[in-house]
Amino acid sequence: MPVAQALTRDISAVFRPNPSNPRENIFLNTTPATGYCQRYPEQCRASGMFSIMLPIAVNLTQPIQANHGDPRQGAMFKVPANWRPIQVTHSETGETEIVEVRWSGVGAQQRLPDGVGNLVGGEPNAAVAHRMLWGGAAWDEAPSPCRYSGLGFYSDVTYDFFWKTPSEGVCAKTAHYPIPRMSYYNMDFAYELRTPNPLKMSAGRYTGMLTYSIGPGQDVDLGDVMVPDDSALTLNFNLQVDHPLKVEVPPGGNRVELVPQEGWQAWLNSGRKPTRLLRDQRFHLSTSSRFKMQLECQYANGNTCAVSQAGSGHAVPVDISVSLPDGLTDAAGQPVNRRPLLRDGSGTELFQPGFYINRQAGTLHFEVARSGVEEMLDSGGKSYSGNVTVIWDSEV
Image (tube, rainbow, N blue to C red; front, top):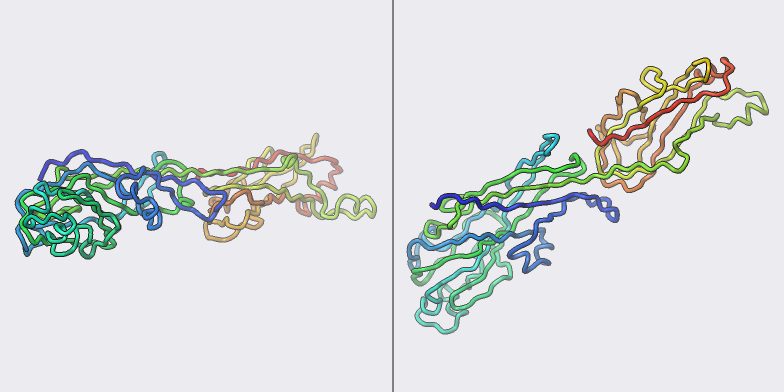
């Protein structure tokens, strides 16, 4: 076999959430199409195929005998049509995911330099001659398990073809006349991808590679008499994940005033002391990313924040919790409703979207409990305040 050449091709795909279709969480293949899918984009789009043309030439090393009994002594193709896994690795975090790829078709330009009409005894009609050469079936009529693709252009010396490969196996043609010279040019293969769930991946770039051997008995097997001038093909995979994480708070929403549930008027009018001070603050969230949440406090009280009385320094804890939009769950797959936010981040270590959350409403809940309210009233203080920072962090 020839020495392996450095034949490489890049396959790229990107995930960016689609606001108009938030449940479409798939990678978009951004690899430029060449070969079959460049000619027939609609057919490839319908079946999820992509194609790449390769500058590989395959030449006959010894004549093909008429009615040969061994498929390996004639024209045959066996390509890696079964799914193969490739590990891709995040360029910064080292996280790994699995991409799968399979060949779903193969083609080329077949060349018969002696002329197909001459090979079958001087038949002047090229279409008839090609059928005679292969026992009544035109070259583009693929042998099982391969399938006809719709592509077939021919002349007396060439035949452009493409065979679909729904399953892995030997697709062989038996010549009914001797063939002293034959070659394939511009080898062309179609492929399908299975990509991981981008919503469970960190933003950034993932890379990996897969090398196929080409030649007799190899991953891409063209029989024993048709030998390629390249003996290896390396596919470099590049997956880009772009996650938005955007939190929008209404104007003035960063100033939260805690008041009794029934308002201050009930106390002023009837002297009935408030039992709780609270306020719900709405926000809008857009994300396709995993994230975690935690607190930072101007005044800490154990694992939560506090508000403090100016002058005396007397402080009472503020219970803070969050309710997230539908479609977001915790690590156990449970919805997030009034989940406590704590300084150490416990209980909010992972929130996972099931689809792209596009500017959906969530709520931050702030509350001073009854015991804290009683302390505030007993102290005679009029004003308590404190800064609380709520953190949404996509570095999970």
